[in-house]
Image (tube, rainbow, N blue to C red; front, side, top):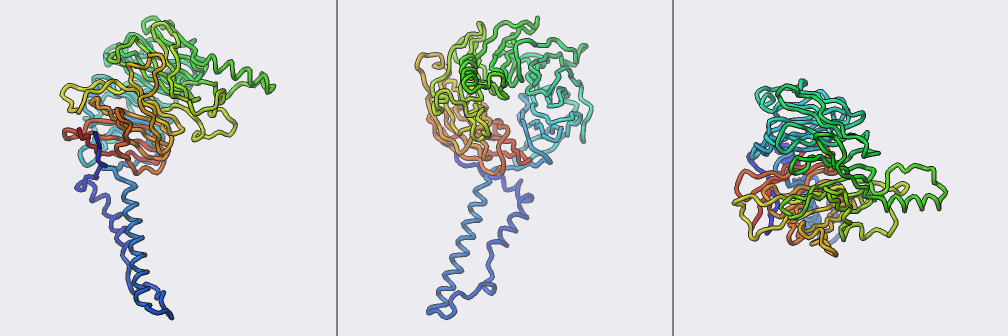
Length: 491
């Protein structure tokens, strides 16, 4: 399996790139009359000058080629502020929502060679950090650091033009910023986790009672609820927090069905260290073993319900949801770390120096009719800020002594990742250096590098392409844009 580098759609990009190409031509063109005669007083001066001019021209051409190679996207769509998060409508993958740092979200239609702006969604008073479509594609939820979730009716948004500042519902309750939003897999209940240690569930349907609080999930977390979602069957809500706790909630009663403190060992170790240092009363700003990412094991993996969580210290741990039992830590994670050392909490440590597992996701079950050279098992990809990507077979995660199938060294730290939309074993990994690397999960081979961002990648989305065998990687960057890359899987 291989993926050739993506190529821009020339018909769609000529107008946008015309000025840039003209400038490149002007930069490359050399007027001989402007050249300094370097050969004065030297034998064969004409030949020397000609060689010098040829060398300069070659250098300029090479630089122009390198500049072109640094951006191989099909489309760049700019914003006025950082693009923080992405979501595609499950019923129409050409409809994409983007959450922005400027307190808005934008609804876009992505065509084969262009991006059509549909609506700008206003009303939040802080960054929009999570966007999600309901399973039927009818509703869009936007979660913000202002502590609210707003719900928008997609059909009405599509029927009108211009800015929109009147959502169908504005859901309130959390005392601090919202970190994530998640829809029920079969209905219009929506859940959100907050920095205040709580999670909330509202009824967001268009029927009577829309906007009512259904449950407040409180009492399990002592820090921000960084991750969460409905369980795959919709019968539970699973949350994971910066305090290292994974909690399973009964959505009907709001009670804790099971919970697990995954970082007990780390906390005890940290406490002993503080006692040795005389800092017993000093509270840690970032708890040892705090959870920053979560993925739920799909039923196709043949296991009982399991949550896989990534920690700020570089660990990946497994929790059985039915019992709350900590099943263990995956082999291969944090193996480059000195035992007992946490880079994430070292004084002066920058995000680039941390081992935090920010990117974590299972591959999808292969869609019927998908062309593939061989059937692929369900895979788990885990990427950390040190630039390590580990790929595991999901069915072997619980096997004693089982390690990663592949360990891939990335160009920089992994921030987000997304698997092929139709279940092929291909994963796109966004990174802190602005590169998205596309990796074959079966072989560990880096198939393609998506280039063009000038700042770190904040989210990555993979959607089906417009032609058979193609798919699109959409990346959201801290450089105020999204980029779209068209890639082809070769069986």
